[in-house]
Length: 194
Image 1 (spheres, helix red, strand yellow):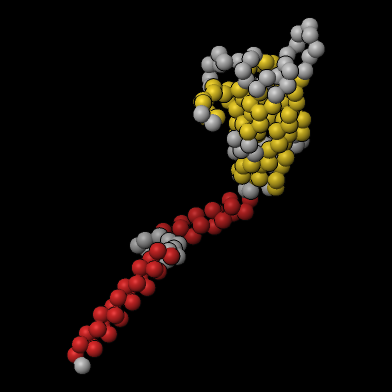
Image 2 (image 1 turned 30 degrees about the horizontal axis):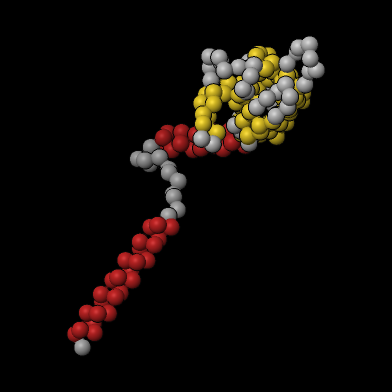
């Protein structure tokens, strides 16, 4: 989603939130990215608004001046031109004993200029959803590992057990047309013999 907002002292602020959902296992870190660009220098600050208990959220950079001289930038295309956008990384680190489920995180951004004139500030919330899905998957992996260990111990099987894949629809179509062609050839040959 791209939002380009125009205000008297906040001209052409562009925002692109690359994604807002990730599925991770316990012990992993969810990383999100926001791209920002502006025609004129503007002060940006990020603040944590909604964070689950005992979670750690790191925003890098957290407070900065957005201008065209950013060292780390990404080029993104807007219609017929390219702009240099500053990537802002959001790292979300759940506690070690996190329970499976979906967790919501909200980061607030304030953009504007402080000067002697009338000040205009723009605020935007970025919402993220993190799905922790660890215990069931880990149990399944442990069961598969124990089956393979048991098979290797007994030595009754040369190859480990593999999952049988489904026949693709392309293979089914090819087999169907081959059968039609063979039936047609046999029917023509039979009629020719009569």
